[in-house]
Image 1 (cartoon, rainbow, N blue to C red):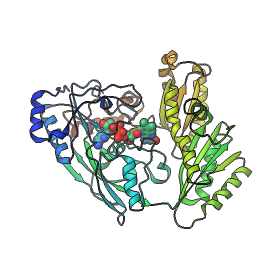
Image 2: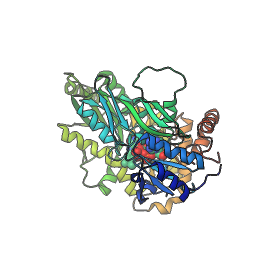
Image 3: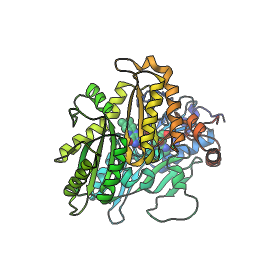
Length: 474
Ligand SMILES: Cc1cc2nc3c(=O)[nH]c(=O)nc-3n(C[C@H](O)[C@H](O)[C@H](O)COP(=O)(O)OP(=O)(O)OC[C@H]3O[C@@H](n4cnc5c(N)ncnc54)[C@H](O)[C@@H]3O)c2cc1C
């Protein structure tokens, strides 16, 4: 389907219905993405401040068949927020739709506009003594609309679920410019097809999310974190099961860390304090949050003693205070940045059934070593929900540019393995523009056909984020 570039006439039409403040200079940040792989283009940058203004923009674009690229915090890792080959599209930034409309402690609900920065949503919940548990390393920049559009996961999924699980209702503008007011706060609502869950994870390909009602939770009164050295990834699974049985529902995060991550931190981010001088190959970071007078410290101590006895852990540090807990978390949260600075040959956001993680790690290492000598693997992530980041790096002292040709074979090997283990080639980052071919290769044909039919039904002109998720030539 051919789209038209925006032109002066359409801009003049938009100027009649939108205030001047909507028209923004096209700064470089709207055309870039964190990995530097995609470089976007824009005919005009519009930053509306209300759902009515968003609807005006979408209606005009539908009338003239102009592509729209929704832009949130710009932290997406699969190129969904930057379009390279759409003719002079409208880049629609949600940054001015950043109000917290309501915080209701009795209903345990917060209503936030799509452009609200995630950390501000968390902060607004805290002011009502409630927890909004979505937590990602990018939380100071990403927006709630972007989180929902990518169905972001992060470190709290094990206990609280991903973005989809945290959303009760949406307000959105559909591709013909219709405003859908679905900002309900219901926890039960079986009234036919679930439009909310179609828009969540659609990465802007089915409409623009303008606001969301989101679940809040009791605010834990105390947190405890521990870092453990473990003999192997299987021990992590046994430990997780032990923690979940013995510590009730207090386990908020359970992160697997590889020594390679520590080495990258020491090399690229030496200001980060590492908990062990001589770390074992595998470690886990456990975070617990409790309400009431549950004696978490004693219970955790008991779990650790049992773990040592069962050979599931060889060393452990329990954070003595909040500052130390934050230090432990800084290690985990800075690993992605250290990885970026080292530069991967190929990186993968994958998931497998939790029980198959050890097999993934062992078979993955064998496949990678078969592709080249001394390649380094940094495999880490949210072991509690089966989501690992599996990144492959050049041998120490070598540059990734020399290994460019290996990127494809490494990806094919890892994705092939993930597929064979019943996993997913995109666990939490989405499809964007980067993984459209992978979706075709590994996606179920019936699901793909249904996706195309949904896209054609809701966006027959193909104006919403063209090329993302369901690529036009697919
Ligand atoms: C350091 C770092 C750590 C990260 N950690 C995690 C992690 O732990 N877990 C995780 O899941 N992700 C993680 N990410 C990826 C990223 O932060 C998430 O995908 C985030 O949800 C994107 O939000 P955003 O506002 O930046 O969206 P953007 O990057 O602006 O957009 C992402 C996609 O959503 C669309 N979009 C944005 N806003 C809207 C809207 N209002 N309506 C419709 N479509 C919209 C865009 O068109 C694009 O397709 C990380 C990224 C970085 C840089």
